[in-house]
Length: 141
Image (cartoon, rainbow, N blue to C red; front, side, top):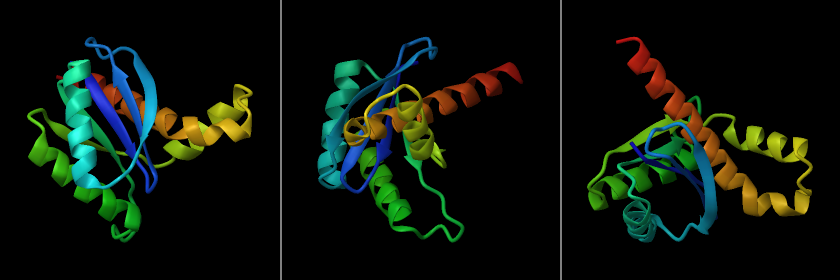
């Protein structure tokens, strides 16, 4: 099943997609975040273009569950579920941005390029973790 993953920030949305066998996740270019309704429309176009059968959205989790990021993502998830005909799942995104920055540093990417790459790399990490959890659930059946 091909999945499209989103890492939703206040300015950009990182994107990643996997192959139909759920083995390889790849980053796509990030897009500008211009509100939940416009994003839902743009994601619907990407779902069609990539033949995605599901969307997974990274959900920031704070102790109180009331952070600005959580509210923004919850609004987007609702909008996606209203616009898309494929399942929309959420996955914990805790630490993915810092992990993405560490990977960029490890591979020698100059810090000036990080803003254009970090969000989609975080989306890829979200997708990889989500796919691993799906595989683990299938293995335990």
